[in-house]
Length: 233
Image 1 (spheres, one colour):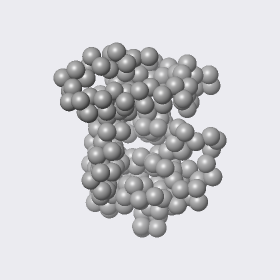
Image 2: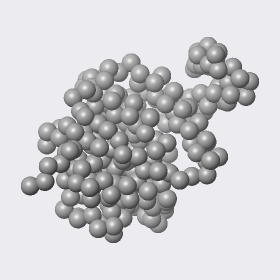
Image 3: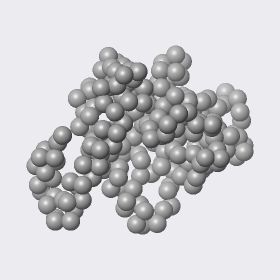
Image 4: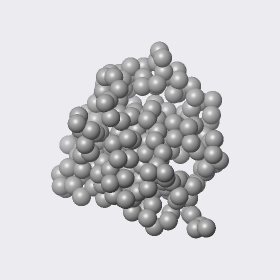
């Protein structure tokens, strides 16, 4: 029997086209995951994602199922594929994969595949949601984007990470009660009656982005913390 270095490879979803086909970033993630699986890193792949936060209503084809179909076309055996189709953001990816698959099967060592620009934010979120009981490492998919697009993606990731640190930064890593409360009482994608709306979250991220752009434009990096405090809602 082969000795695997991890219990599972987790592949994070991203936007799927309306016809169910995968855009380039999603294909790159699946291709990387298929390669990692072929190296014998783990005996199974978990494709994670329903759709993005901004979508109204469930999609005809989930991100997870679309990625799994592409993986099968690359030669990944169907019996090693698992689907998590509830999550709608990175927080949900970590939470639902853990609750649906990792905890019930006592899987604690995972390798996460996502786009290279997405890794820093994902690492922070997974550490916060899963906690120290899990061994999480990353195998990034190279985005191969134009330099201007990469810069824009990096700025957007910084904006979202700043927001997440503001929103859930007080949650202790792996605090089960706090994480459950976040998902089922506070998060607009999962709570029946959330304390904050998706629109409010988006507005706050946009406000943070404006502050960051002011800092960049005027070279005020040393005053970033002060400017962000002044911009708080």
